[in-house]
Length: 193
Image: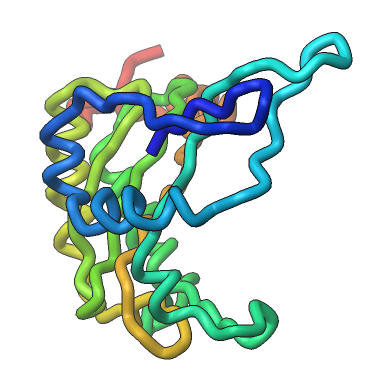
C-alpha cells in the first residue's frame, strides 16, 4: 500500500488504480486498511534538514503477521530444497541449457520458478539473450526435471517461494580451435588438405 506521510507526520492513503492487483491481494489490502490507522509515530522524509511529505510503500503480509512468533528471533524460515540435492538439480539445468543452446557465443540470461506449498515447481520463466522460441523450449524442458522438492516454510508452515538463477554462456576459444583442427567437417566427411 502507498501512504503519503506529510511533513507534520500525519498520513493519508494514496489511491491505487490497479483494481486487478487489489482484487488479487484483497485479504492483504483489506487488512492493511484496517491496520494502518493504528500505526503511530510516522517519521517524515527529510530534504535539506527540513521535513517534507513523501510516499511510503507499506508491505502488508497477513501470512507473516499471523504466523510470526512474539520474539522475531524465534521465527524459523527454511528455503525450498531439492530432495536429490542442489548439485543434482544444477546438473539437470546445465544439461538442458547445453543441449538446447548450440552456438558458441556469449549469452546472458536467467530463469525463475516457484516452488509451491506442495513442493511442485511451477511458473517457470526464462529471460535474457534468447529467442522467444528458445525461451519457450527451455522453460518446457526445465518443467520436466524429475525430482521432488521440500517447500519453503515459515515456522513449520509450507509456503510458496520463488527462486531465480542467472545463466551465463561464454564463448570458448578451445571449442572453436577444435572445430578448425578436426579433420571431419560438419557432415562427417574428412576434409582434404
